[in-house]
Image (cartoon, rainbow, N blue to C red; front, side, top):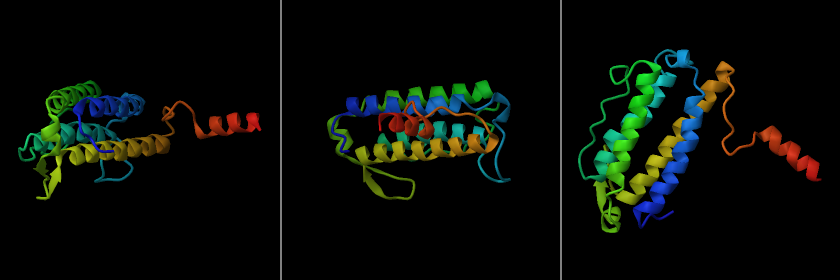
Length: 168
């Protein structure tokens, strides 16, 4: 997908975020500090990471500024509500930055934290891939915990199989 105008991208990103929001909202409030292994992201870390990396890396870089990401620890937000507020506020700030990008700016190159020059629209596309990766982590964590999570597109695999077999 080549991004030549920001409005269709923003619309697409909002749809991606709605699916991410549904799985984040399935996290039990008392499980934000849970992780499958010491030293790995907790559920809260993942949510904070999604918020902070979007705002302080991607949104900074598309403005041709250096990355300002400093991590995803509890110093950013600790309680369930604080984490959710941080997540929503960072996203809103990022959208306000992205919405200002012109077609010309989308074709400019920014510099990634590793020093690679990348076209801004490709960097935005990478941001979406990054979010989807971490959404998958949350699904796995919830599955390990035995927490029912929302189907990605409205149907579970089992429901799709049932619908398919009923049509045969």
